[in-house]
View 1 (cartoon, rainbow, N blue to C red):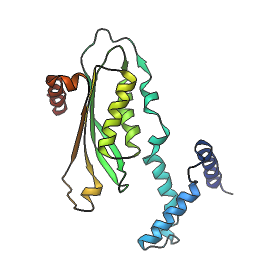
View 2: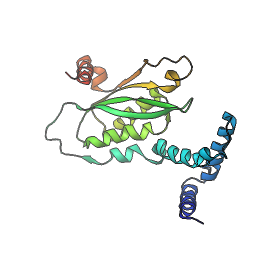
View 3: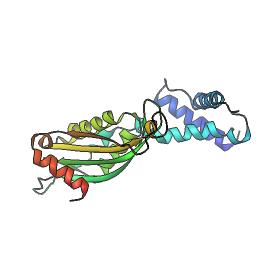
View 4: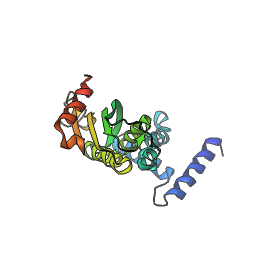
Length: 209
């Protein structure tokens, strides 16, 4: 048995122990071979022999968010805010996800802001939360709400604002094939929902002024 096979067996045993209902790596690879045959090609030909393994490995990366808890990421906070009471904002967070209807790419950017109370979080953690939810099968609307809910639940801020703008390949490369269409979703809570000036400031800061 070669080293790659040993590694595959170890990973498969780990996956089974974490989630006994999860199909094995070999079962996932067999499913890819079935799809290749269904598409009209031969999964046994030279150029496709390793494709099932590559696809499964890629899917492990695409959907790694199922194995992570965003609340735990946000739970590492700082209590000292030194009197800061304005918004904290991250702009232009690259986002890569997959639509739950066709399992094709959603590509775009996310913008997040929150107004802290007694707790702040490292700014990289906000980007990490976006990444965790993005690396799951998603709708853009659900992902926007999930990110907002997680920040509200863990940080209990005065308010959260989120805007996601993305292109969906299920619309740009198939179906009606409109490559220039972007989808925008927003979620405002607390002061961003109650105070129109806060909402306007957030939207203005996205534009860079």
